[in-house]
Image (cartoon, rainbow, N blue to C red; front, side):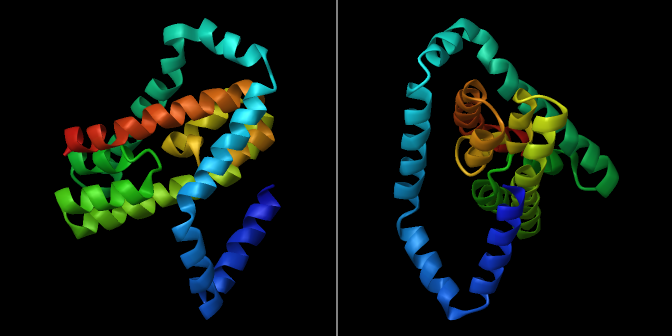
Length: 196
């Protein structure tokens, strides 16, 4: 899967250098919602085929919030450490980390609130988080545990990194991943506004 991700990235770069890349981009952008809904539908089928999963999720109750809470606290703590290392203001670094991997929203929102420079930093930082997640999830799955795979993905655990979760973890983790993604995605605008 990692090799396929690298090949896909390289092929994307090559397409981007040609006019063919803009045709593909136009088609994907026009149909991005349909593609996301199709992915969620397929995840739903996978979850529905395992009858005991929904029951197990109900058993978690409030404990289901532990993973998103840990991701938020860990991300903001990482942003505070980066503030000390880079000299950026603490609130801006925390806001960048509060993007939780949702690079498009974080870049635009922080750009509007803190200026174009911090918007660019937020975009690149959260984009790198998503890209690194693709390469980290297989390693984390092998060397730690399935639940730990959700952390690097952050808010993207419900969409772009979900195929990696499906490939390298189990059905229960996939369900938790979707729930985590929904919660983290809902928190991103609130956290960014709070930090700034």
